[in-house]
Image 1 (cartoon, rainbow, N blue to C red):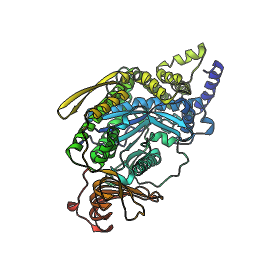
Image 2 (spheres, helix red, strand yellow):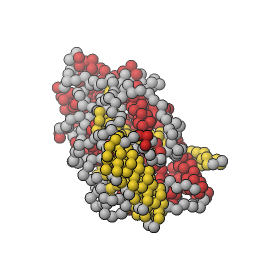
Image 3 (cartoon, helix red, strand yellow):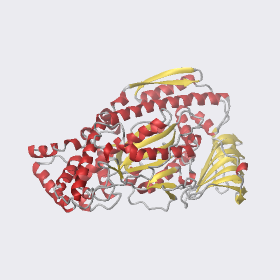
Image 4 (cartoon, rainbow, N blue to C red):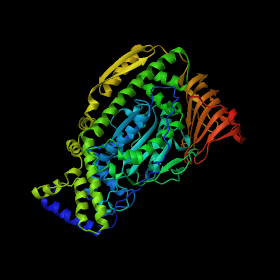
Length: 640
């Protein structure tokens, strides 16, 4: 707590600053997002699997006590929209803004969740709140609190809102989330096989492109290396915003990007979403705390952004997008079945195991969908959401007053602006005078529950305890007993559990009790060869004489960081027949994708080619050499 003396001193200092800039700006934003006029589309899902989710939405929800100082520092020195003067980086108001980014992200993300949830099939939109962590080896990073990201998903969205760290610039041009102004940051990514030239990265807010690209490349490489070595944990991608805060000194690359404006859907590049400070409709904010039937954030941004996400869903082969995530999910139940899945082996025993395992994964998805619904109810529809709406309404009214008075050159508005800064970003005061001053602006206090969360965390608390506190304070509905009905063949069974760990134990037990013997000639100890690589790699699938044969998945890499992935038919240890291949060279940005027919490890015949910053094209190859334009009618595409 600040003493009354320190509180008054701080007010005087900030008052002087605000007086100087009282007429500098009126905190305006754009009323039209680049996605505002995106056409509404229906999602067409031709997936063979019922286990996958359509969308997983990740967002920052809480900070571990050990990570607070690192997060505050990184937030202040990696400002989006300008450079914060060193003297302003350590202000208490800056740390409050850093916390407000998380608090408001937890609120605004629910609008995106609700909009997608009502448009997409039931139980296919999942929330994944993240806790921000720090250690000496990784620096600042994040990890999911729930098990949501273990479910195969067609696309994943990273979402948060943003505010410039320096309150001195709040009324000017830098991005801010305050009152009727919202600056969204988001990234859309998927499995590398959905768009190999960009490692599966589809869309990114401009400041996050570099970090999102790096994370997608790391994710792709780690999954390849895991297939080669058959060791190591699955790569856990941190939130791209947190990766951005942790990557100030990294080298900037020239990346394949395209504008979010205009139709460039056929170009294999990352859609670059500009930083937008969006102004929501004031008429929807005037009584937001009482009437929130029409969400102002949905009207100004989310509906258009959701339509853009649905367009991505329609452009992606869902089975391709979830193929490798399904294989990882199957391996939790049955490693042998996971290998047979990569090989696309037939046979009744394989089909029976696969149907059972996917039915259980679908049940897990439904359980996690119930947790997401509980998280929404606790965050948006509960006390947290009500207090947040009261705060946003209060911020808006103070901003409007500031705008009107600024036009009249009335310096008394500086007092209102100062009160807004001190109250909303958590300045505290002791003593009757300070308390009375702040009570005048009680409607715009930062959420008490947010500070309650922070105060309950001890530095030595481990991550499990952190998650437990978070669930208790934000969404107690997550810990209630839930039941999911699993359907498999002609049978139905209800699985009831409190918490996902108990639910997972029950699904594993069910699988082990009902599994049949597997009859399939597949292995993960077979060699896969590529003409340009001196040493062979690993093959998962059919095998003859120790070499890749029939259908399966092969991967090979060299010490320089070059690698080749192949999915399809093979003969004598090499790609032969219909298949798809990703070729990654360490000295090139992105990867090249070939799909069609192969012989002796090389494209041979009619082949579709995808490269960074290029349109997909169909070409004719002879022994790996492009000899001219190919015919689409002769193209043999890979079936996932």
